Amino acid sequence: LAYNPQHMAGLQVFFQALLNKNTIVNVFGLDRNQIYSCIKQYNITHLSATPTFYKMLLPANESFNKVLQVTYGGERFSESLQNNMTTLFPNAKFTNVYASTEAGALFAAIGNHFTISEKMKPFVKINDNELMIHRSILASADDLELENDWYATGDMVNLINHNPVTFNFLSRKNEMINVGGSKVNPNEVEEIIMSMTGIIDVKVYGKENSLMGNIICADIVTES
Picture 1 (cartoon, helix red, strand yellow):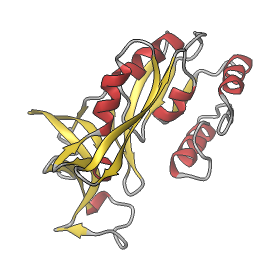
Picture 2 (cartoon, one colour):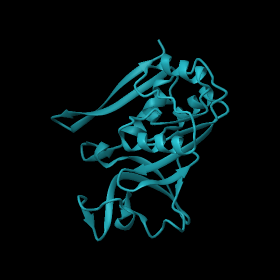
Picture 3 (cartoon, rainbow, N blue to C red):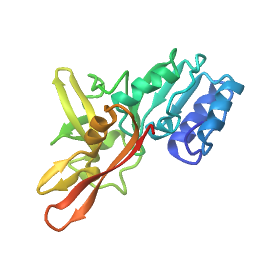
């Protein structure tokens, strides 16, 4: 249990483990060394967490062969992070899950490419590179702003293929940084920086600027 147990994802993991009669090991809020100890002590086989949680486990100076399933979601999971995670969990299957508070889990994929199945086509669409969900599968639409029965999730995607509809997530709509009239995706900048040798972690963000409106800044953690 690596999610906040009072949030939707934490409740989902809790009840899934409970109904499957699995042992639940609570690692939420623990530091890196404590999590490592729990994985070894309790022979943890399945982990479900945000990419931020997995970043906290790096650099991978150990490997855990008994972990068989690593599930992630809630944020963009970069290719560089997955490469590092395969070193940490060499025998694990990696599954990317997209879920929303309003509709629950909608997609699962290996890697970052999601496909809208024939079954889901009436309920999910992409409009101006934003993922839209039909009100019929929303838990409650009373407090949501809808446009012709469609809810704009705020998740920006990149359309890869039309048939079947395949896409990957870029960022949240409100995360895009306007630099001199151009929208910059901080996640893409972070991925490029993470591909450089000697980089452990990076956070890219916008800072107000009188000339450009915003400029791109980065806080970088290096190996030395």
